[in-house]
Image 1 (cartoon, one colour):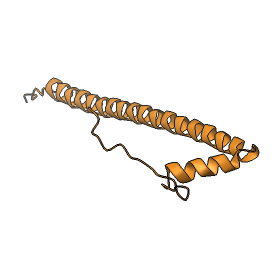
Image 2 (tube, rainbow, N blue to C red):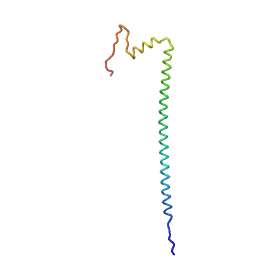
Image 3 (cartoon, rainbow, N blue to C red):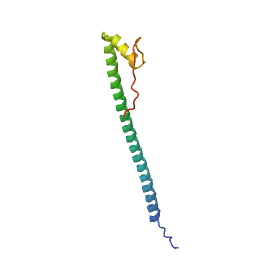
Image 4 (spheres, rainbow, N blue to C red):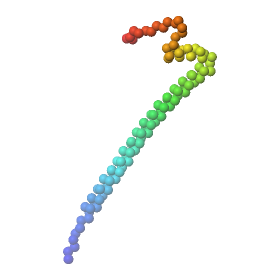
Length: 103
């Protein structure tokens, strides 16, 4: 009886190659996920910075308006807003508008 020679080395090598490829794919997936997560974190930090800047501007505006309310120049503030934003004029007052184009 002759014993058949079996070559198990190629199977082991093939299994090792497949395992290596799978491990590389899994590692690549995790690296890409990590990069995407870092990019999301950076974007959200930028958004937080923008919102903080807007918040600081609004706080400053609120303080300015509170000073107007607390001080005695309410009438002058109301008159200025009425003239600038609403276009009101006093009776008999003539308003001239500059319509020449700015060069």
